[in-house]
Amino acid sequence: MKTFNLKLLMTAIVCLGLIGCGDKVTKSVTNVQQPDTTQNPHSRGQAEESDSGGVINGGGGKGVLCEADGRTTVEVLDLYEAKHLFNLNIQDLGSTKEQSLAKLSEVMANHFIDPFIYTAEGYMNALNETSIKHSFEIMQFLKEGQTLKLTKDSFEPILEKNCRMVQIAVYYDESALLVDKSLWEQLDWTNKAALVAHEILYFWSREFGATNSMSVRKLVGLLLSTKGVDPLANDLPDEEDALSCRLSREDFSAARMYLFESVNQQNGASLSASFFNLNQGNILFKTTSEFWGLSFTHLKDPSFGGFRESFLAVDSYPIRESAKISFSGISDGLLHGSLEVMGNHSSKVKDSLSFSCDLPESFGEEFLKKLTSESFRSEMSSDNYDELTIREDGYLTLEQTRHVGGPGGITGIGVVPLNTTCRYIEKGVVIDRDPRRIEYQVSSVELVSTIDGDQANCEKYVESFNRLSSDGSMNFSITMDSYKKLDEAK
Image 1 (cartoon, helix red, strand yellow):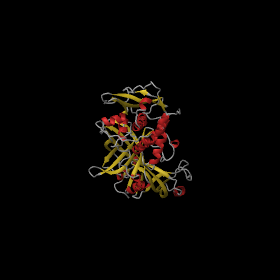
Image 2 (cartoon, one colour):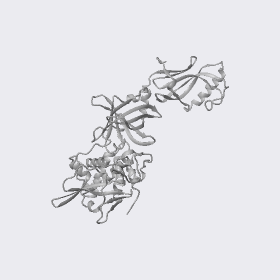
Image 3 (cartoon, rainbow, N blue to C red):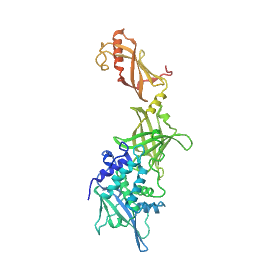
Image 4 (cartoon, rainbow, N blue to C red):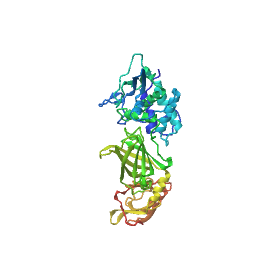
């Protein structure tokens, strides 16, 4: 019997399906990077029961055994509920192991794949080579006369007459999947595939805080039904039309978000968000939000601030939460902001995350074009002030008076006497900007005047500064807190 660490294996698939781990998946699972779950507040190690009776780790798959008209049938609970609770028709996945597992990997990949990160072929291959394949490798069938105790994580609502719950499989010590052989042999291959899907998805869910299997059973039933379910990436636009964002909770990379422009129900502009693994309740089903009145144009405007609030929609469930998104500006080639998840009828914050979005080069160019000619002044005294002007094309001038003497100035500037004071203009281009800070690159410096007539030393300073700035290495930032905008731009 081949054994290995089940948690590492399944975490690799969590990485594949829910978090995202780097380049598009085209190689074997040995090249799949595993996410760091050490700081995930919902991650658990050993099996334990929650206070509510739910299983945090080490859950299993149940079935329904019915005896009627002299026949005994066994069906996985997920498919039983799909038929009797949700009135779904279940697909026939095939009569062989190969047929049923091929169909299972197809429907799972179609539902969970992030097309901006993975190829469909690469995702399916990795899914087959990890969870599906190894779920069979770690199966340990019970000996004749042995049965499994029922787990306390299902909370099944209905059961027909002459039917009873049975435990078909249970994880044990993260290294084995214990299976009741007599029950397994009574399942057809559609049900066997459903059981494998249940074990995979319930592991994912427990890793992110689930304490019962109800949403997993609902998803398995929908995935294998003729009705189907909306894939997580459904309605995403082409990759070049969306911003890819990383959501973080404290220091833990928690989720992905894609922002893209859309048209709302009233034919107005909206900024839509699609989430992957937003929080423990929204990792299995498509989760979206639509922020009315927002567009990429707002995000490119340096003066834009504030927030927007909207419902958080989880496919196949009623609306129970809302999301508030705020943008703090552009810096280091990234769009920054925060996202808060709240109860639908409460202002209480249930989750708070920060995000950063990769910006295409064209976005940055349009951001600079959005700049209007503006001038700002920071006054130290009536005769000592800085004046900053930013043009529409992103070019900048900063006129300022500074003590430039002594060795403590810019590295490489020729040392001039300590009492040297000059007024000069830095000319450059804006690199990044948010409401509180401007980063710019100096291309040249011009002398305006000298204080106390020290012309020669000021000229020496400017000459040295221009020599150093010629290679594009003179980057500076300005904190805008002390600057006030002038009524008219120069």
